Image (cartoon, rainbow, N blue to C red; front, side, top):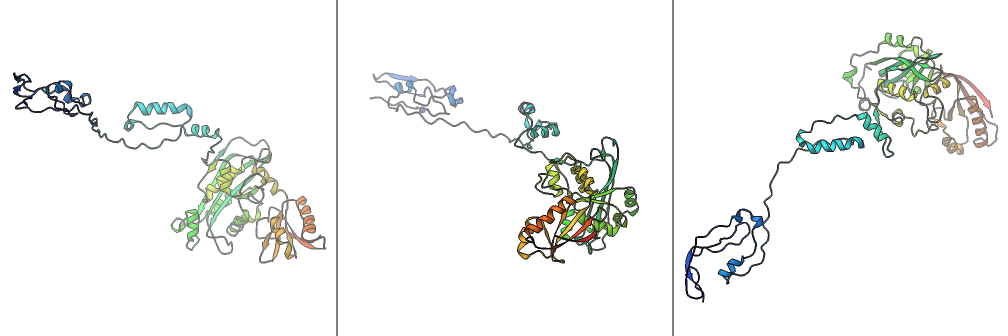
Length: 419
């Protein structure tokens, strides 16, 4: 029978602690001989927990066979070192493929906090995206104040005009902002040439600006307080002008004629009504939508910026024509147009008239439409006779308008025509 060692300090076999290779004390072996043991020494592996044996060593079993062999203990987890988190970096816009490797290399080589701002050619990035079928690029519209080239022949001097008002009713509401762009159009190309002269002025309407107008335009009472439109500057720009262009001239013309009589003596064209934008493949005739279709965005509903956007749109070639929007307006201004009223049209024909683009005039209680040429007028009269009046005798009213009265509150030459 073995005599247990006296003074034994035990045997450690726990990972991360190490073990003792000896213990202090004395005793007898199996034959009755006295045995003296040296002082314990801690294994150096105690400082390296990842290399410590996790089972009872063979030497210990020889000395202390009563110790169990022991199953492997779970490996001690390395203590997690908390590192300071790097500050989140602002998201960089996607780069063209040729620049991506350089960006990644710079990010890896330099700590995030020390990465300098990347100098990016935004236009190069936009051009790279434009060639990809999954992207459409919109650029901020920058006003052009000097158009390239010179006219090779005759020119038409035009005013591009826009107003902001206190409301829609010309008999009650007033102008709060007026913008004019004066520029020459080369008749041969339909393009603007040379310098663009600009006027933009505010005017106090003498009453509070409605909240909905403030929300739309951003113009507040404080902006217009004490302001007056510069009549001398307006007259200077109108001198020698051949044509006034507005997007929805039927709205703008009565307002400016009520404020400046000179506008009543000029010819007018409307980029909203004189161009069939639907036939040109555009989903909307709104100016913002037309600008977006050309790849531009801008701060809309301020008079001057609306004028710059309109001039830029009209300087482009029409999608389904061989000429620009400006060339189309010059042509429209040179030809008469007709306002046709379907007098005494049967009630049951209202859906056909509406589907064909006729509008209901509530005060005169009649369906009416506008036609741009003699050819369109003759074709429309035939359609009315066949589809509305059923080949019965009927009388319709036709008002012939030229560019001097078109879109104004003044009447043209009115006649009655029998179908």
